[in-house]
Image 1 (cartoon, rainbow over the protein chains, first blue to last red):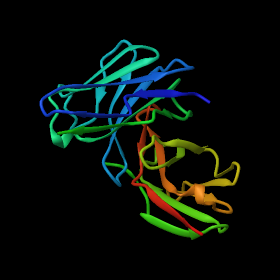
Image 2: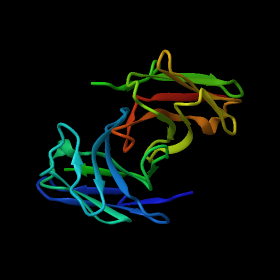
Image 3: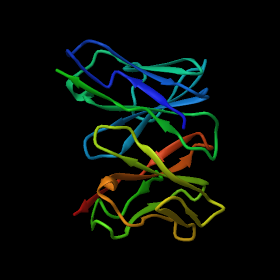
Image 4: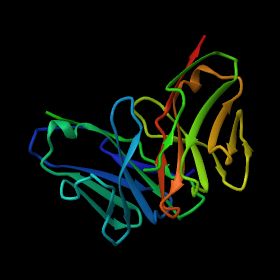
Length: 116
Length: 112
């Protein structure tokens, strides 16, 4: 099956610094990539949708200047958490689809971000 | 806004029994649904999907039922095993087919 690789799996950073998370589709071209955030024992909350070569579409309430998304190629999207604070600590998960419509989304392994 | 939700936050079953996990959705325009399994600290794994023009689909040990009349989705797991212990999410296709909205999740616990 299709593989989405997400790195790093775990990161600890100091408050005020920025952290970049990478999401790669290894064996398919991802026309669309998605970034989710998940707090403990809660569901996945969609943060933004990114299409290759265009600006990401952010969900309501998600600060685009804080969560920078770049989808530079059909196999790579990055999420940068800028000026991180402890409340940004969470599990971030990316997913990718190779086309719209009736098709599953493939998920990365997730990144556990801890801001101290 | 419209959302996808689950009736039961936690479900405990005996090993070997069948499990039924339910999901209610409210967006009548949703045309595709997916069940995902998520183990602790990992990303969701695809289990099974169903299109809105179907009411039942079967996989290996799993069956998904869709009732569009009452906007209800269920996942049935036959002969539940310890390895089935995880959180299960239903997701619906929204946004013109370009994104998935997740339900609240059900923790399935399999007791030996």
